[in-house]
Image (cartoon, rainbow over the protein chains, first blue to last red):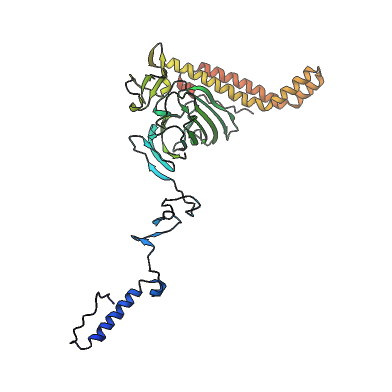
Length: 257
Length: 144
């Protein structure tokens, strides 16, 4: 039953023309009615009216769903507007970045690395910023008395950093792992640490907890705190992680403030 | 790794850039291939890489400090035994001191074993002839 555009063509000479034209008109009304919910124009609701280019709109985010702007015209992802617990950080892949990127609040940088000894984060920074950093390595080796570092501004500054670590391990070991006020960068533990860190750029401090495996079936847990105690050099680039061995893995950096 | 070592123009301290663009503009650098930026020193107005002997001596000091901290953590849980015995001796209560030594003989033997192990470890660290040998020394007390 095809839709016929402008079906009436009355000349007054063809037999049964009125009947034929009325049948075409009925067909068209049927087709038009099918565009409404329950095939009833009285419902005043057109079928599929909530899609744009085939995408539905909803305040519950989901794949291929349009989230509407709020009454102020803002894309409001707060819990009071969008009824969802879905992860709302926007991911930026900086794996192959060659210049620094200014991570915005609510953005997450993803940096994958493979068989390297250093990983530049390529993140521009300034004072009054707060980051969450997750470092996950794919290897498990015994790396005693050699250390992972985070080098702000991708360089070292002689005797400008204070750091302390403490550890517990599954052999029953509990002890200081390291402490100093004269490091050349943020020292981030020995062994192959997998860590969660909070770093802020005003007081230039970091705190972290981590686990490591020491090359065998041991599991260790460590805590650390660090401070860049000189503030004479501006902190403009978040830095570079350096490793005392060749490693692979990934780093997530989320800007919270 | 490659580093670009320089004296920071404002801070007047040694810095080692890990990326060439991290060097402040107009600053002279020394390009070096090192295992770690910690291997670079500023010595008598000259930027240079530490010698193997310097690195070994430095790492021995770090290892000895690590050992000291570890032994302290092993001994501290039984320090109360020593305090109790010492208090009895201060009171000239010889019988009580002897009784405490008997009561805590297992802890005292453990402390003695830790101290003997500590001396052996210190000697092993001091005797290490290379960084590789030194790094192979694991500080972990396995005695009962």
